[in-house]
Image: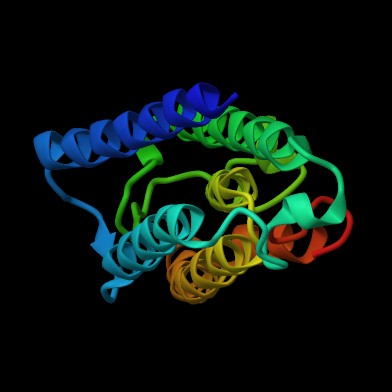
Length: 193
């Protein structure tokens, strides 16, 4: 099972690297308003996953902080891999649906339409939902409460900051069409938030 975690982690890393390379090759030509949020998301998410890995190996086998203390051995790795797989698919699907409009920095083109198909039909920021699922899944698979807390809280904080910056840029550039979409579509979780 742990091999599945490693494979999914490598696929996640390859996806993110390919997106950054794609952005570098394309260059920028749109209104840019990132404000360092790409760096914030990368640093906090990477820090959380690295710390999760360290805690996984440092905590003694019988520690009360390990999920195995609940008497359900192995459930966290299965749930973690499922969450990571779902997050990877959602992030990839979001990138494909946005196409050329998807950037790793906050950029909004004046001719960019408001996308309401695919995962964007249900939530405004499905690629961030995917990142959060990936990170939380990694924390679950690490098998302890410290890892899970870090991989939920740090990426969530960075994504919330990023969403605030991104939404200001989208409203400023796209105006009423985006405001209408925002009023009728939840941020990260369909039907909830």
